Length: 230
Image (cartoon, rainbow, N blue to C red; front, top):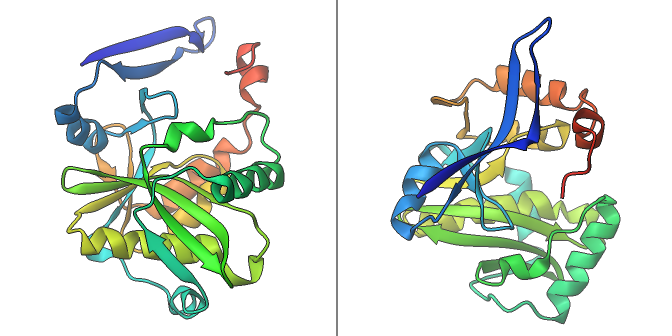
């Protein structure tokens, strides 16, 4: 395993303040490295790079499902294990990207090796979560939905089922990606959530909420660095 520090994708200050920010990634990663990387705040991105950041995970022993998600799940058919990127998955993915209005597109093929947690409503695929097993843990990489059934809160239903599947598989933690910006505030309401401070896993939700709110006050990457992030 090799760590790389990319200062062409960062910024710094030295005249009136001391600041140096850069992207830190792990390369030439072996399967035996995965547990160490996850437990030290790294997430694998769609490029296959492991990036250090404000990671989040759920301690499955402390997780408690909500009554609302449990009730709504009874109106859905949920499957787990299929990893075929078929036309239904592509349709949901395209609807998801359009709904979110993303400036960039993450290739759907990046998740071709993942298991899928699929949610069907009246026989129609409405959401997919891409997941994988990593030793004694599980990782949730991406949730997508066509947002045609907002009344069913499929994000909450899927998140509950991810945790329940992780529990059934004997996982200690479910890793659920980074925790940046106000779009991730929902994570702070999950029982058992922990976040990586850079040195330890913390359960201080007040601090995490403050950090996420602060993230959303920042200018975008192009404004900060002067070039678009690819």
